[in-house]
Image (tube, rainbow, N blue to C red; front, side):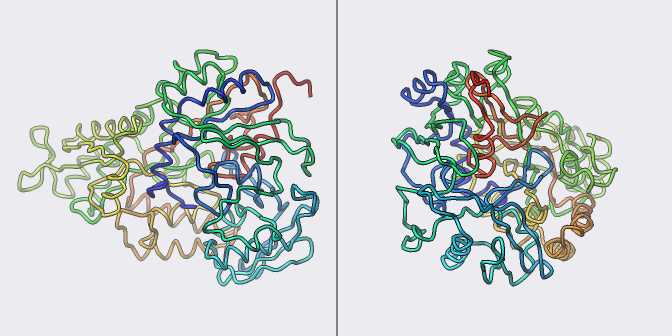
Amino acid sequence: MSARTRTVASIVSAVAVLSAGTAACTSGEEASSTSSVLTVAAYSQPTLQANFNPFSPNALRGTVGLVYEQLFDFNTADKNQFMPGLATKYTWGAGGRSVHLSLDSRAKWSDGSKLTADDVVFTFTFMKDHKLLALPLTTAVADGDGVTLNFSSPGYSQIQQIGRVAVVPRKQWATQDPDTSINRNPMGSGPYSLGRVTGQQVSFQARKDYWRQSVPVKQINYVTTSSTNLLAQQMVRHEVDLSYAGIPNMKSQYLDKDPAHNHLWPIRASMKPLLLNLRRAPFDNVHVRKGIALALDRAKVADAYNPGVYQAVGPTGLTTQSWGSLIPDADKEPIAQNKQAALQEMAQAGYQLKGGRLVDAHGKQLTLGILTVSTFADAMAYAQEVADQLSQVGIKATVPGEAPSAYVADEGKHNFDAVFGDAYVYGSNLYNFYWSMLSPDSPQSVIGWKDAGTTAALDALAKADPTGQAQATQALEKIMTDQVPTVPVVVKGTPYMYSTTRFTGWPSEKNPYTTPDPGAVSGVYAEKLFLSLRPANSKG
């Protein structure tokens, strides 16, 4: 899975989420009349294509987490604490070139047979043989109470990718092709089995024989949706229990309609910087980049659309909530807007403010087009706020919004001055966060940053064991603050909206036991969520 939401698939997925809306009538009626059914607004495409292959990028949500279980994950909602899945712990060895996974001996497949170390070994070997594993894996072997994975180079930075591997039964998958199978009859170890599948809905039925615990939510419907306005109506009528789509004016359209039951918890797990094209002058000049950074009021940008969802971020790109112990005190808070200091930086690059225009020695005004997706109302609002603020220091800043496909194409061809729309995921190890954004080898990096010091710092962080990762990270933080290869602006919030009308026990800021993700990112998050909820009328 990519560390940054930039590919065509991710842009299309983002369209799906941002345009989420109304569930099929049958699902809404079923959910509203049956207290044991939980309905999730999960898709926007008009027709769902059955695919329950956990190795496929087109697998329907719930395949991983509800049917197939992952090994473990780290809770992005609570300082990346370890969350066990099929594995109860992991132990590094050989300087990071091996890791031992201790397996939960209780795990069973849905046919009642035991999930064994052999199944885990098969899964990793199967993925390696089919080139589905982005790890330097050499061998996987059954070992003691679990499995040991061996690598050709230290795997410390890949621990989250290791944990998110979904384990499959050898007896079912040994004869399947992971590139073509849609796996219409999945057999997993998770708390749910596949129920009814239609073009607009996928239902999952609770297993009575689930090995870990009794399953409190008896049925989960993942339904298709169509528009943000209709989603708001469905949420207000409590026909949808959970959505992670953005709707306009969340407070007035949803929260204020029923404050006792309607809730919003934005999980901030990724950072949106202003990406300048360093291949173009004058953005290759560090003083121009610093001037732009000083010209921004990040709090106003964060509040430009649905206040409370996004959050201003400091110059390292890291949040103090999760990474405060790693950030120097001087860099913990967002850079304060300082127009005078911004103009002083611009002056060092040869620009002067004359007649309200920031011009070079030849009288040419500095121009900046900020590329974003025109169909995303929130993205356009945020980008326009950035442009308005830059205009206040004399930059001719515009927002040339484009359709998703054109946005991806222009970004891929480096046909832009700046981009404000991409988000970089933090993850449990900051190597992937910084690598995806800054490395010239990263397919997710579009800025054209090539710097030997950055490459060396990334290499050091990749090889650092858990005790040395804090120090290794600080070199990259210093590059961000001193050289400003990107301009951190806000922490992106995923606006999880949920209702306590039918189910209680939801995670919250006060009790962040999981990210309330229904399977789009992490199966461990989804499983923990649905195993922790209780029907509102339950006394248990």
